[in-house]
Image 1 (cartoon, rainbow, N blue to C red):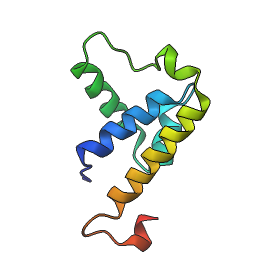
Image 2 (cartoon, rainbow, N blue to C red):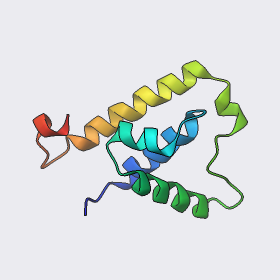
Image 3 (cartoon, one colour):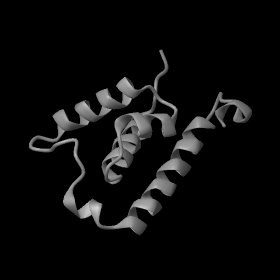
Image 4 (cartoon, rainbow, N blue to C red):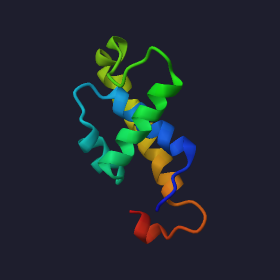
Length: 93
């Protein structure tokens, strides 16, 4: 089983929540993780935040530029994690 750093999980959940209309399946595919893995991370994050839901807050639905900037930053962090110690850059893609 593959283990992901906590920051990667948090970024993946934040990315999903920041994309209005995104599906768990599409975000998981973009990140290269299993759909159920991402779904579990979202559920886990919801349990840690009482009163929250896995849907996107209304504020995030209006800022297209903010969403694109956040997506770019998350992808950059994910590439950095994927190319961390012990990883082959050619395989990390």
